[in-house]
Length: 202
Image 1 (cartoon, one colour):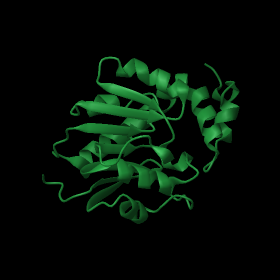
Image 2 (image 1 turned 120 degrees about the vertical axis):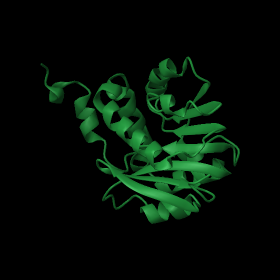
Image 3 (image 1 turned 90 degrees about the vertical axis):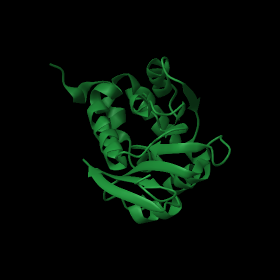
Image 4 (image 1 turned 60 degrees about the horizontal axis):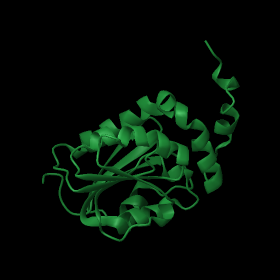
């Protein structure tokens, strides 16, 4: 048995604070990429399961954006989409994601979520799980997700509960220009799943 606190990357992990610089976030995830699934995979899958439970029988199709895709754990949940665009700031996370992307129609892009390199209104589904708390300007990231999402898009984001620097669920609802949404909680994060047009019955 090994002591997690003595692993060489743990000192870097413990230093990542809310509102860290983009370089610090990139370095953090570069260092943790090879261990991420083992350390956080179960927790991330809980969030995905809850998001799709909230969506119910909603028919999903078209093109999906996985913003802050990490190691690509969400890909298996996005099989309904004809294409997946997965973005992350960490090269090593994208290297891990490439393994999961090889049998799917996934395009991996290294970029800044606050300045997405895509034209507007192209994605039918946009997600940002465990991302916003790591950004200097989370509101700008929400505006970008709204900009690139289609008029009938489904959006799913998580917000760290109790964070004073993150938008509230109500503010996220407004910035994403949602018409209808559901809110849930998974561990320490609030999960907001919403539609840019009515309704969850479609």
